[in-house]
Length: 130
Image (tube, rainbow, N blue to C red; front, side, top):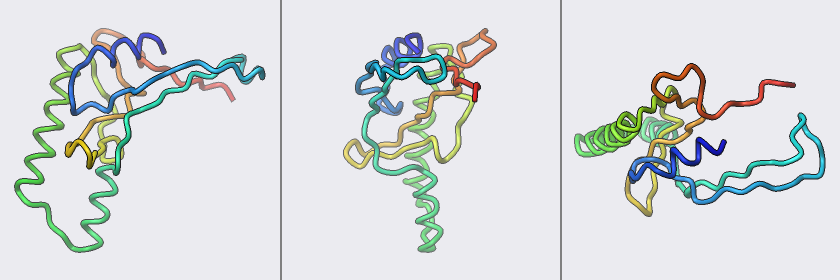
């Protein structure tokens, strides 16, 4: 995970869901051969794009040209930042795009499937053991 934190922390883009803090806690219990847990504290977001789409559909509200252009531009800015860093997101969908009311912007998040250019595996590997 340390590579993941270094990569994401080095990217300066308001349209990427940022990490506020991270730390390791010792559980004292050996879960899956991992006695420590890595805790990631992410920036606060208010809603996902998926939730916005559902709400708009429920109330029969259409997207305005301005709303759609704002979403598209901010998503392209996030993807451009990742691309310049040689990172492929690999999991873009409405549930991985967030909106912050405080910042008034969309943010791309959920970096668990990201890949570095030329690599064969994800930056953050999920433990597949059961």
